[in-house]
Image (cartoon, rainbow, N blue to C red; front, side):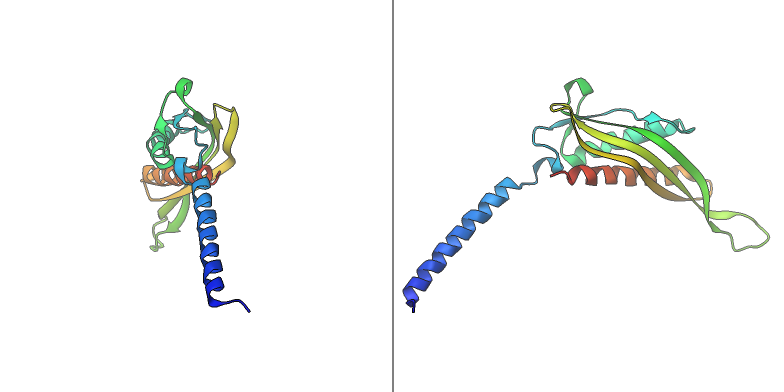
Length: 173
């Protein structure tokens, strides 16, 4: 039967070994770079090709992505020629003006809420290795808006799209 002294000694050794293992794991699996490879410090966002009849959509998406992607992924904005990664894609569809809720007055055929959907393909490419970091085909988001306030619904859908891109890029660790 082991003595009390040997149990204490083995417990101390086990605790020390456990501490060393845990500290090694923490440094190996850090959260720097937002899930992007550690050498990706700058990112360019290209204007997406726009296959929709809404010309303003391309500019609005570019503005939101430039404003939010870099800060949320921990990278700086840079021109493509000097960046470590690039975000590019195609806006595939923009379906607006879908009725969601109707007026309760039977004498008026007005809707009070509408919905729109934006669908796009997106790709983040590591320009150093020329490999795709993250890619999503047919990424879509919806936004609801009050009658005659389509811009509000568009902003909501674009915010959701950028959030999905950030979450996708961060999941690559």
